[in-house]
Length: 108
Image 1 (cartoon, rainbow, N blue to C red):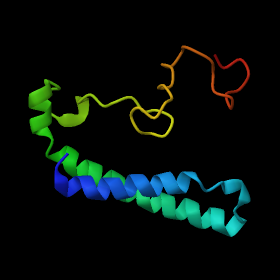
Image 2: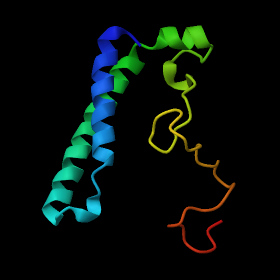
Image 3: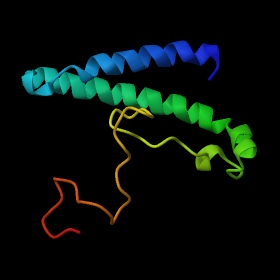
């Protein structure tokens, strides 16, 4: 990562760590509504930034042998916090392991 992108990513990462300390069970209905709206806007902006980089990621694809686009470029496994190495392993592949707690009975 270049130094031009490291600082903003560090700020976002720190903000997400702060947000993880907010327990939504203690928020009012209005606060939860605002939080969900704001998070959706932030996610959309982050996805737009990711897509801008992906649009010019052909060099990564060539360097890693992922094909003609960066979409096949290997990504680290998503862990408990959404960051590599945060302590929890990736979720099991579909059809393996236990169903999620919200899965209907008999869905596996």
